[in-house]
Amino acid sequence: METYSKVQGTYRYKAYDDYYLGKPKVKEIRYIKILAPNAAAQLIQGNIDAAEIQPEMIEQLEDDFEIITIPEHWWNYKLMINHREWPMSDKKFRQALAYAIDRDNLVDIAGRGYGLIGSPGLIPSDHNWYNDDIDNFYQHNPAKAEDLLDDMGYDGEEIELLVKGGRNVEERIGELIAEDLEKAGINAVLRTMDPKTVDTKVNGWDFDLALGGHGGLIGDPNFMARNTLDMGDFNSARYDNNDELTDLLEEQVVETDEDDRIDMVNQAQVLYAQDVPALSLYYPDWFWAYDDRVEIYYTYNGMALGIPIPQNKFAFVGV
Image (cartoon, rainbow, N blue to C red; front, side):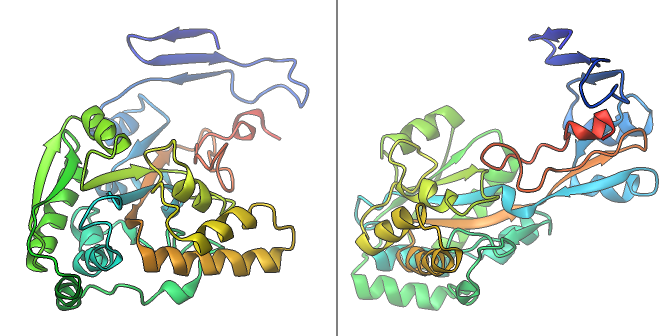
């Protein structure tokens, strides 16, 4: 790295000609900040060679640029649930939430049709470890949600739904969820707050429901254990109320027989879906466009804990 500007958010990298696999085919790489709505124009004008783009830009760019898609199961919009407090502590209430929320509608409206419906078993349906027994869990059914609420004795207590302000997609998701819950008889009040405030409240269990989101759903299914049992991560459901589920998630980590591990992860998905410690809403599509100077691509299963960085080093060194 030759230069870095914290103020401008720019990086400049220079090729190392004595690289052991041979002289790189790219002499210099520069990362610059642009406004997301300007990405297509910047590409067309030749000011940049690659950028993340919005879905509506694809048609404008696809004739002259290559378009690549991040795996849908990289990012997860998720409903966080305070399962320590009534009425969220009742499994029937959490199941009612799952029946009440129209996840297909979230993809169509908030995601503009670009995304994959969330799996109640956490592991996305396009993942190699997905259990297709989850396919029919919680089809949108407000009447079923009302029946569950009646069975548990829910009397219309006010439920607060926290959403991070300044993020258009998340605010729209919150509005749609609040509408769905109201139709099912849940007295949900939408509260928009500063992102740090929402994170602090969720971390301190000072919430009822909150819209969250995180990546890391690529690769080894141990992410299911991290996002369920990790008590130190507010992106985790922090749920250990089901001993069978907890045991399966802990044991699958050290299971060396793949067939046995598949069975354990499949069982865990069903138990997770039945208990609804948190609810995956949908996995959005993300797109990059690039010109023909360098062919960029995503590393299979991403980097580190599954971060899908679309600039693999080997795209620039020519091996």
